Image 1 (tube, rainbow, N blue to C red):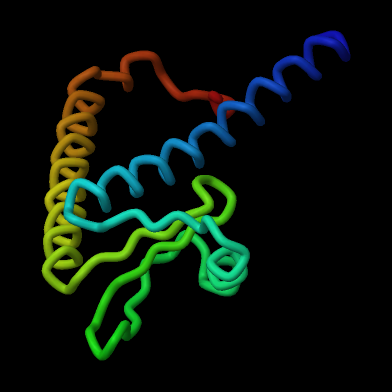
Image 2: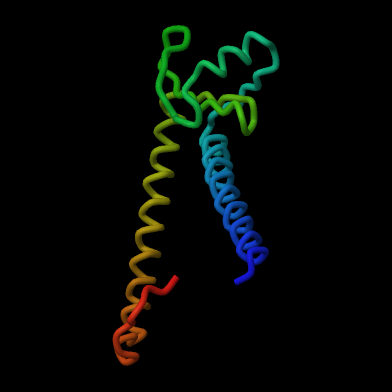
Length: 130
């Protein structure tokens, strides 16, 4: 491979891995909204400062006016936070569990497909395949 080809392949891998992280964050934000979380924009200097002081991209419980709420802050992506009630959080958690079960079932089916492909007839592999 030429140095230029290596550079292009490296750049493509970097872009695809970065977009994967963005996709995950975007999916989580979409799922929070779908389960009742409200988006709050940091549209004043005071809100901006407060948003920056919070844990980023982590859903965490806190107290607001004596009520338990759940917050997901994201300064870099949307300059906002998602705020939800206990009921919103429970719906979100149930959706996460359901999605995890679906992913597990899909992975199990893929493993069964791989097992039925009879790869052993090709003999041993002498080097890792990437």
